[in-house]
Image (cartoon, rainbow, N blue to C red; front, top):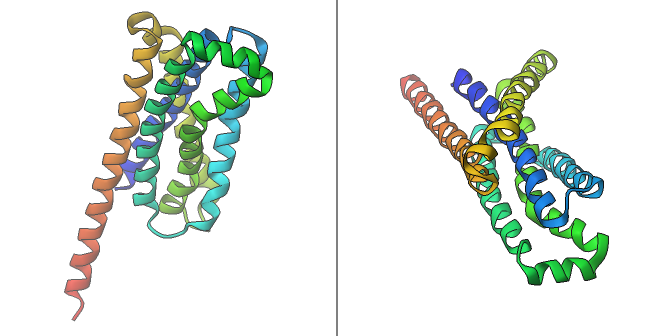
Length: 207
């Protein structure tokens, strides 16, 4: 189960940075390719990650299952962001954004990407609870972050240079970053069920 979860977290990192690159392009198309747009996307992205990680302080049971739900939420949030940016591309939305000013633009981007980034930010604490103990939190936590970062490099390269040119920004949002999150969630559920079956067998053997 441990190896499967490590692989999942690598895919999660790839999806996270792919989403960021694609959101940057989508926001640029809707709001204009400006420094303010880039700063808004980055601010919302890291705000979501931070809030997600902060929220995990209240959870300590069922970390693997929780991780699966978080990845499922991230994939659903990616589809949500696609829908929001599609709405913002309409002329009526442009008129509203022009009237709303900077605050309205920031709010629009936040509504689009915060659900996904919140879920992604909570994945590291959730998986850390499953794979690291108090004694190994430093070493294993660092390795988890390294695996996630390595996946992020691949995701950024794919979303920055490959997928948008091949299939377009809209299609790249759902292929393959969102399926990667769905795959992670299904793997986590499988890993959880395997662990549950093993625990039941151990209990049944106790006289």
